[in-house]
Image 1: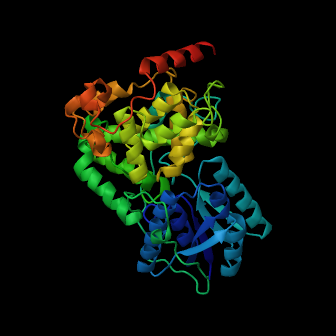
Image 2: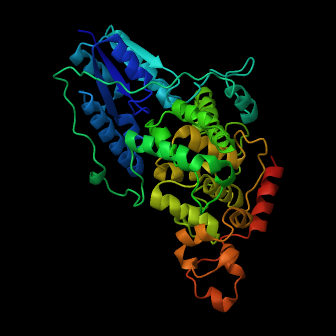
Image 3: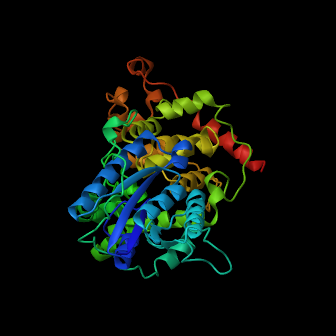
Amino acid sequence: MTVSVVLFTADLRLHDQPALRAALKQGREVVPLFVRDGRIEAAGFATPNRTAFLADCLAALDAALRERGGRLVVRSGDVAETVCKVAAEAGAADVHMSADVSGYAQRREDRLRAALAADGRRLHVHDGVVTAVPPGAVTPQSKDHFAVFGAYARQWEQQQLRAPLGAPRTVRVPEGIGSERMPSRAALRDVSAGLAGGGEAEGRARLAAWGRDGMAAYEDRHDDLAGDATSRLSPHLHFGTVSPVEAVHRARKKGGPGAAAFVRQLCWRDFHHQVLAARPRAAVEDYRTRHDRWRTEEGARAEVEAWQQGRTGYPVVDAAMRQLAHEGWMHNRGRLLTASFLAKTLYVDWRAGARHFLRLLVDGDLANNQLNWQWVAGTGTDSRPNRVFNPVTQGKRYDPDGAYVRRWVPELAGIEGRAVHEPWKLPARERARYDYPDPLIDLADGLARFRRARGKE
């Protein structure tokens, strides 16, 4: 009886799962395998929030497989060594997995292919699973990737996406393949109190509800900080409990300006993935414009700590940072404002901010986190690298009555309306009632410093 192994990585679902489908087509039995990668854990990427969400995803995947007669096999260790060992135990000649984009993912694939080949086994890698359009499928003439989003988006929109695959009805797993116990969220410490639940069922329910109740208004409301009118699908896309291919198909079927705006965000996600696939060093190095005059995290420790704690004196920045700490997630407009404040107003190296985000974001992945930070910092793909987001102006525009600030900065709850965005302008007697710091820096001073430094480059 032919047996194949399916290695799950960032694709923790049964619906629209090409690797699993191919393995089931190839043989009557499969070993659905997830390896708790020792290299990722040693590198510090397995943070409490992502580990907790992952635990939910694995439990849900195991339950869904058991409903179909199967189960999930979980092992820990080096991926190449572990997969080879499981393949030998099962007598499997073929291993299937989904392609991924980071430098580490590419090296992992190469190591696994070589290790399997040494044992006389084959690795099959499936594209278009982690992204809607595979990296490299859309390229400019004589180049390996697009560096400008607009040009990429025009070609991306013309691509014919494959039809989403249904979940298999039956999954047969050979006897005798041992598994570790499923990890549990309850066993973890330092998980954000408001962290959402993970798993394919959760992700699919959110995608369905979003298409039904939220997508139509997305174009008009996606920057509404207090309205919380975004899909919140990013953690599910990061862990692959929702298929980006299916998300695009559903949105296009619904149609309308809101759906088109949502699809554009999925295109942005693919854009960043194709950049990182072609330039893996962009995870740690300036992608386009090298900039060496940043203040370091050590040199600006007090300011960085105030930013991390949501105590900068700028209410909308502090609200967003506190949302991040509580939920392990932040509204996209908040990400832009907080990143701009650190990199361009405080003038701190973007890598310091990116590291903090990766410590807390449940959806934190290298493609979106690092390249969005570079976009804001002016070292990435933004065609206007010197733009600076003013937190007061942005707060008044996207949180006009201050509801978002009052939700996350409760010490300012007594300030009504737009005045909450500038508490330092209140009369001294009234200001004394609020336990809230003065601004870390005058915005005009920060802007002048930024322009002086950039003018020297």
